[in-house]
Image 1 (tube, chains in turn cyan, red):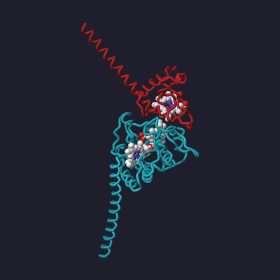
Image 2 (cartoon, rainbow over the protein chains, first blue to last red):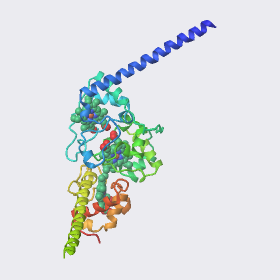
Image 3 (cartoon, rainbow over the protein chains, first blue to last red):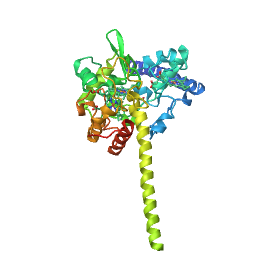
Image 4 (cartoon, rainbow over the protein chains, first blue to last red):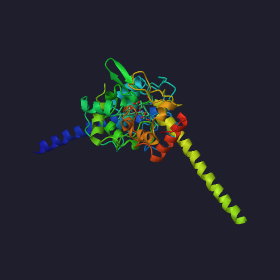
Length: 224
Length: 122
């Protein structure tokens, strides 16, 4: 009896130590990542503190880069780490420009820094992204809203056959499924003002039903 | 006499305030057009914004085309801005802005389009 109490305490302590050590490692990534983010002046272009403050078109047009204050809710961790090492244009045009193409000149990080910074960015969550259990789907339900009922590809590139079709002012949706958290896509479509009070994409909440928005989120989450 | 002058001054300043408001509205309409519409319709409204790529199924309307734009009534224009292409039996590649812009902003955009096309609706 005594022995077994003793051994379960021992097992528990080993377990607790493991959890603590694990948490410490994860936390080290976050705080080192924040250090790198600050020292590279990433915050000179990116907003990292919520909530969204922009009220007018002017406010939006003076921004230099997309907000990152909800990055941990928006992105898939694997995508972030990979992208920071080897950033490829996401928006075909320069940020909010109608005339200049994306210069493909984003700051690049080495492998260790990319891991730490992605740990840090993944710690920036928004409580407005609820677990909605959106699962990637490529069936006709979402496609019909995306292509027919609305023309989402009017401003977004998507794959069609062997090529890419669509407009250029929105972020490309080629590879959206690898990049974005499905629950964030749904939150973005149903509650856009929390993330982007002013943006050049129309608000679809109210123009489409909740089940259509859900189908759309599933469809976008399934885009390769 | 003084009284009449005062009334005239008051009326004049009320008039100036009103016309200044519509100047502000026109400026806001232009800013809205350049932000929301120009991405497809072009900064000058010629239907040549960056989204008017070759792969699109229909081209955005050229808003400076007097003949085409004359075919639309003021109400048609308002309906198509708010409800998208479906509202005038056109392509849904024209998106709905009814949940993005206020009714006053849509009405001001309609006036802005009338200036671009130099036309009136039938």
